[in-house]
Amino acid sequence: MKKYLRLILEILLGICLVAASTLAYMNYSAKKHLVAEVGELTEQLGEAKEALEKMHEKEPAQEEPIAETGNIAQELDALKAAFSNGVVLQDIEMLYKAQKSLSAERQVGMASIRLLTKGAQDEGTIAAFQKALEMAEWSNRLQTVCAAQNALAAAGQKVKVLQDCKKSTEKEEPAKDGHGKKDDKAHAVHWGYEGDNGPEHWGSNFPVCGTGKKQSPLNIIGPFEKSKDVLSVDYKEGPLKMLNNGHTIQVNVESGSTLTINKESYDLLQFHFHRPSEEQVDGKNSAMVAHFVHKSKDGKLAVIGVLLNEGKDNAAIKTLWANLPPKEGEEFLPEKVSFNPGNMLPKDLGFYNYEGSLTTPPCTEGVQFYILKKPMDVSKDQVGKFPFKLNARPVQSLNGRKISAGG
Ligand SMILES: [Zn+2]
Image 1 (tube, rainbow, N blue to C red):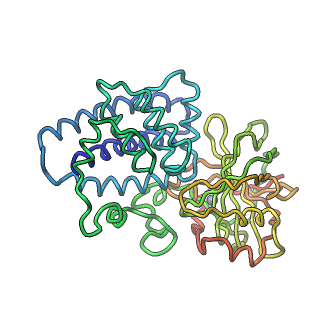
Image 2: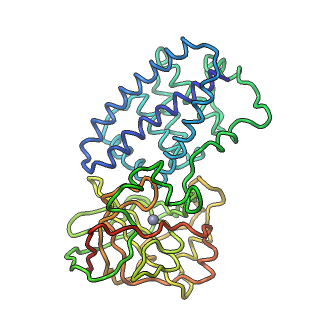
Image 3: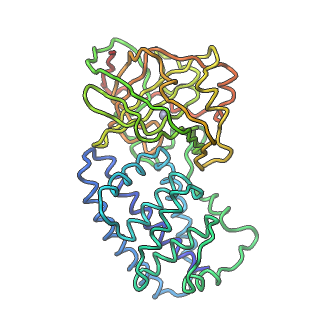
């Protein structure tokens, strides 16, 4: 049991370090830092492993690691939340694409981020872990290998587990009185929209949510400055990929759909829904809002918001709701269903613009919001079919920001 926990601990530590550096990066806006930080991280991971090994040698049979995994489970849950928008994964993949070869640690780190973002059943996650296995050197990377093998086995994959790794898992005692994975969940930090996990409490686990001065959403109310920004969208039809990430229904979009702001191009990563709308116009919420999340080559984020007012059936949403994911946390690709995100947008792209933040933890700032003036329809029936009754963060303080109008 103890050895198995140590392996889990090790892989989680790796994930935490990868995450710490990528999240730190997200808070800077310059892309350059990422390369240096990931390099640093690799060193840190090596050091952390050494420390772990020493700890293990010194204390061969104690119970502390169990308490430690409780804390790490909490961190892991917080990280899962941070990864749910897919931005970190895209960053890492883009960075690694440009590199000729990856170290085994980086490969494991990337696989772990995939695991957190897309779930254990995702083919890419499994492929990434398997790649890590192929790359690992047997002599000094046994722990990395075991960690990857055990992670795959835990994900229900048939993997050949090395004899040395097996030794550590075979000693695992059967869970008594139902304590095990389920118990870990009880310790985990969740964020949500109501009660102790509600938006008022996000700041205790995600500081920017509490202390940020440029947070989203906003109540959009005049007078407005005039915006000179020119928006144009070129969204492409592609295979429908749906995800219920536990906080919203998200549609992941293949690369190729773009938003151009003035002359700068942004890739559409995903869009998702909130009920009711997070933004208010003159103090009023719409029934829902769709947020289209875009990212530029140098990492800037821009969100287009389409307010959905109660009215007629929305044909595009009809297609989406007919293909809701059967399971939480796993990307769902219904067979032979294609979708064009452009069908969700009004023709007129007149907008209100302000600088804000992600509206979910970690509430990272530096996000440009373009809330379209022209709402679209959604029927009462369709609103009722959205699996989340309430997933909207309340409006935040303006703190001297100016809202502009344009288009
Ligand atoms: Zn959103």
